[in-house]
Each structure stands twice: as structure tokens, then as C-alpha cells.
Length: 177
Image (tube, rainbow, N blue to C red):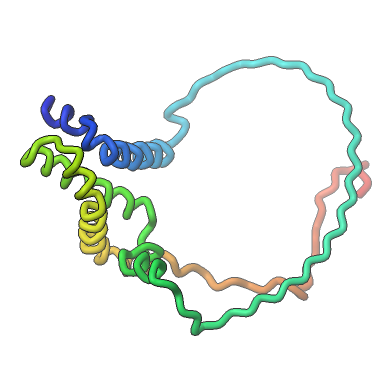
């Protein structure tokens, strides 16, 4: 275990380790956010007395006129096509980031184990390692695309312009509206 930790934090693998640690910190914060916050109930009593008297009058007039022309036959560049090929936009970015950084870290640690820590080899294999990580990520995330496409379909938007409504106010006795 100590050998793996030493290899992970060696100079050759440090870039990949940092990428993987950033993904792990993100997922750890997601897990903490999903927990009920009442489990971490802290009571802090602070008493502050501040009197501020500010009178602000703001008048804003805005006129917005926009025209949007969209062409369904717009051709995208090679970069957008490459992102689409690697499932960007169809799978959440952090899932792609996590799997890609894990694959790149595993490849880098394996290569260091087999060939020793060599900066020249690490730099020479940086681009192939990224490409291999993206290819393996595409293979691992492709079965998830239908699930995320079903999740993406929500309710149809409603156009509320020119619809009438009635507003009801609950005034207490003696209040003027």
C-alpha cells in the first residue's frame, strides 16, 4: 500500500493524482450534500444589534428587443464533433471527468511500475494517455446514454404570455392593501 501511495504522489503521476483527487472531492461533497443536514445540527448563538437606516430609490427602464435566427443545418466544427463522439453533452461532465481521470491515473501508475519513473516517457505518453482515457470512458459510459436521455426529458414549457390570472391577497383585519 505504501508503494502505491509513493507512486501516486511521485512527480510523474502527480498531475493524474490531482485530477483524480479533485473528482473524489467533488463526489464526496455530493454525498455530503445528499445527506440530511439535520444530522449535522450545530447550535451557534450570536447576538448582534445593528441599526442601519438606508433610503434607496431606484428607477429602471429596460427595453429589450432581440432577434434570434437559428439554422437547423448549422455545421459544427471538428472539436464539437469530437466532444459529441466522447459522450460530452449526453453524459454529465463529472462522470466523464471521474472515469477519464481514473483511467489516466491507472495507466500512468502501471507504466511507472513497469518502466520506472521517467519524465521523458511521462511527457511523451501524456497525449496518448488522455486519448486512451477518453476512449475507455466512451466505452464505459455509452450504456448510460439512454438513461440520461430519459432523465433529460421533462415537462413541456408553457407559454404564460397573454394568459389572465386572479391574484388573491390575504389581508389581516385593519390592514390596507
